[in-house]
Image 1: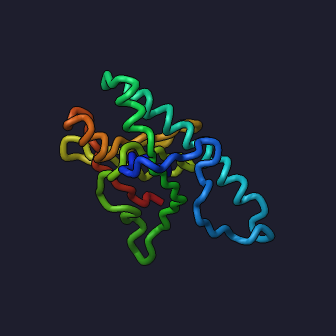
Image 2: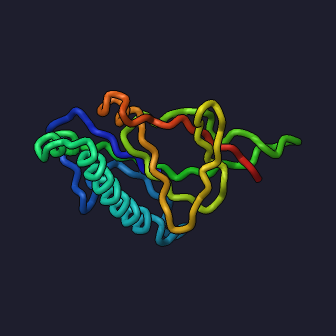
Length: 163
């Protein structure tokens, strides 16, 4: 999951070529997981490019000028999380991996491992969001709802353990 959000610090400039530059990170020992750090760094770099491209499309769809676009996109705040929802213990083989919520940022980009479980609320019902091989899932967050005065919604969603 990668979340890209605007930040209010005008002095901050993210290096798109190395979005983790300057971050304080703790990596697992390379002898335990040899290619973990370079793989995560490359993935983060590519996903940062994806979110920048998605933001550009979003801003164009709103009819924003180049100056408005550069103002909103000038100081991104990007978070990457690796998440795995474990099967609940006991007799209950089903359970919530993540309760119902909207995302607080602008865009959330999800890469899945093909395991179903993501659901979105629509007209009071929970509908499955099937993972499609080779595709990303993109959620608009609360910041998009705010920027568009509610024209674009932030979708209420949850994760249900189905295995």
